Image (tube, rainbow, N blue to C red; front, side, top):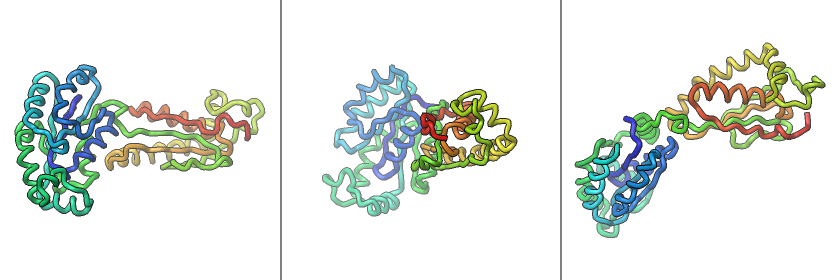
Length: 285
């Protein structure tokens, strides 16, 4: 289900925080714990057209009757989806005990079971008008992320996993935040070709020299096959960011060229990577 605007509500402990974090990773502008009385104010933001997700629940202690009316009015004007998240009482009790977080209605009802039941009663009007109801009783965190991603994908590069590509020189140290690191020091080095040495891997002549190395084609094929497998698996598990680093000796020729080539390939697949040639400005070989 494609949705430009989404309101998430439901029982505390059912996974609303994880849902809103997943939506933010997908490219939505997100607001958690919006006071119900401010719902009418979001209409102006909806006119901007940007994808938006908002969590409205019982944490503010305000009456939800006005929220019900406001949501009905907004749904009449905009393609708004209301998602209600629920969970069994037994699992909610276990989650609260495991996290040791207080229930939002603990000040009204110190008994956890009674607080859960009171909240369910107060949220009943919103559940009644929900477009979707999701029971997370048997869901793992990865399952919930996958469900959210499938139901509310924006079908844009921004909504996909964010990929960062880094070229670097091993002589200057490995990047500490890389998830995947590849070493291309086995490829022929343009540094030892006098007319190529001052140039970088972004130069067409340097790229041509590197691509003529038979090992380059073999490396690229193995690299692309690996990434074609692991990137969708990372996305399926809910990974929001992936950093891929390719290193050579100095970080100016081979690694730069390979990152540029990888960037073009990922862009052709609908991703929008960011590229960081960390050591390209260094003059060492």
